Structure formats: C-alpha cells, structure tokens
Image (cartoon, rainbow, N blue to C red):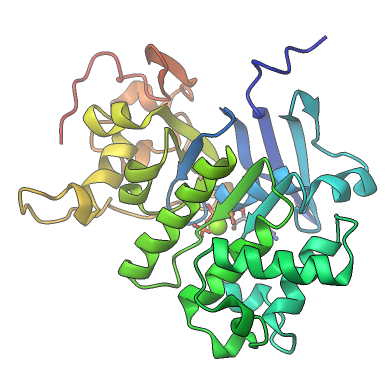
Length: 330
Ligand SMILES: Nc1ncnc2c1ncn2[C@@H]1O[C@H](COP(=O)(O)OP(=O)(O)OP(=O)(O)O)[C@@H](O)[C@H]1O
Ligand SMILES: [Mg+2]
C-alpha cells in the first residue's frame, strides 16, 4: 500500500510532453521530475518557452489538442496522468485548481463576479443558493476584496487588474483545493500589486495548509515565497534545490544567468547581464547539454552527451557536468 501520509502531495516523474505534427513529433517537456510536500510552495522558473505552462496543464489534465503526455503524475499517492476525463473533472477545480496569467481572459465579462464565484462553488459542492451566496461573500473577503457584499454585483471590467486577480484566486480556492497552481499570476500587474497578490497566495497557503506550484519568471518572488525551486530550460529541469541553496550557491550556469539578469540580485549596482542568445525552438536544440550553445563555461565534452540531473550536494540537483568542479559565485 502506498505511504499516503508521508508521500508528497504531488509527485511528478519522467514527464514527457510531445506534440505530433504532420512531419512527426516534437518533444517539448523532457523527463521532468519534482515533488511538492503538503503546505509547501514549489517555484518553477525559466525563460519563455521552457515548458512551465505545459507541465502545469498536464497536472490539471487540460493539455492542448495534439499534446501527448507520458510518465507519471501522482496526487495523494494515486496516478492522475491521463485519467479518464470524467475522473479528472472531479479533481480539477476541487482538489487541484489553477490561477491563470490574465484574469480578463479567464473571467466572463458579461457575468457578475458573484455569479462566477458561485458557479465555481456549485460545480463541486452541494450548496443551496443562499449558502453559495454567503460563501462567495466570505471567499471574496478572504482574498481581501473590500466591501464584498457590494462588489459581488460588479462586472469584471468594473474592477482593477489586481482585484480581478483576487477574484480569480477566490474562484480557485472556492472548494478548498489541496494544490493551487499559479501560472504567472502577476505578470499583468504592477510591482506593488504583484507583491500583494503573492503575499495573499502565501497567506492562504498557510491558513489552509495548501500546496502551491508557483510558476514565474520572477526569481525574487520565488526567493520570498517558495521552499524549493526548479529551474527549467528547453523542457528540462536543469537545477532543483531548496530555495536558500540555489540563491546562495547556484550549480547550473543557466541559473546563474537568470540570477544575473534580474534586478533583485543586483545589490552591488553592477549592470544587469542578459543571457546571450535566446532559447532555441524544441526542434533546434544542440546535441549534448541543451544550454551549451549559450553557456560561457561550456567545454567540448558538454556538446557530446546530455548530462543527467545529478545530486551535487544533499537535495541540490544540477544537469551540468561541471557542477562539482566549479564554484560559481555571483
Ligand atoms: N499548442 C501548442 N502546439 C505546439 N507547440 C506548443 C503548443 N503550446 C506550447 N508549445 C511549445 O511548447 C514549448 C513550451 O511551452 P510552454 O507554454 O509550456 O512554455 P512556458 O515555459 O510556459 O513559457 P512562457 O514563460 O512564455 O509562458 C514551447 O516551445 C512552445 O512553443
Ligand atoms: Mg507559460
């Protein structure tokens, strides 16, 4: 019998995601593996196109048409990858829910927000209309929307971007999920509001003992909120470590590049250094290490064989053959 009590809430192993085209298949997520304990925030970082959203969508069971996932995603000890759609529907929105990047595309512009929060509740819970109404108000209050009794009658366009994102979070937590996936929940917002939304997610996590998969380009946000971080490049996890470890001593040149390119780490006032080049498309990756063509530390051996994700120090994994030999500091 699986050890459900000590098992992580979510455990992903060997996750591959491919798209099939007329000319053949292309793998965009490759052997991704990580786990999230109960009540913890796992931060997933990486440049655009690295496979973060597809990984999230595969957990939700809502990959786009043409995508095929293989491997294993265990939730509460049970396999949920490629579950029959009606079984997945009973988990999605209830035990696992997601906040998307742009609330205007996820909220229905012609329906009052109260109605939309109630819909999220009634999709899974047997509540009367009155109970759903009361609970919707409470939910809006829990995401710190002022005067929720009145706001419930607003349409999405009457709210600011930050308030709309709070409504999305209220809908996502309506049925007390065990896992909340937040995919770039703040990219459309300004910096102050971004910080407030992330603080809110963290507060809700603590109150509800909820686990969170926080996907973001913002390593500063990960540093403040996550317990563990996975860095993705070209569909692979290239570094995985407890958050304080990765910031104190990154063990993959790509992570170093990411850290050097953000203002957050730039305390000494040194100019920000963008990583040279851009992520190649999945069909144009170099042989060997997929980062080797952009890496200033690459040696000929890096271009021969793709490195495995190896444990360099306890709990700190890197997909770089030079990780043990080098001591990289920022
Ligand atoms: N529907 C699709 N059909 C074909 N390829 C796709 C599709 N959706 C995504 N991809 C490809 O899969 C790869 C990973 O995409 P994904 O959206 O997961 O990246 P991401 O890390 O979330 O990027 P971003 O930071 O821009 O959101 C990209 O190369 C992308 O072009
Ligand atoms: Mg994305």
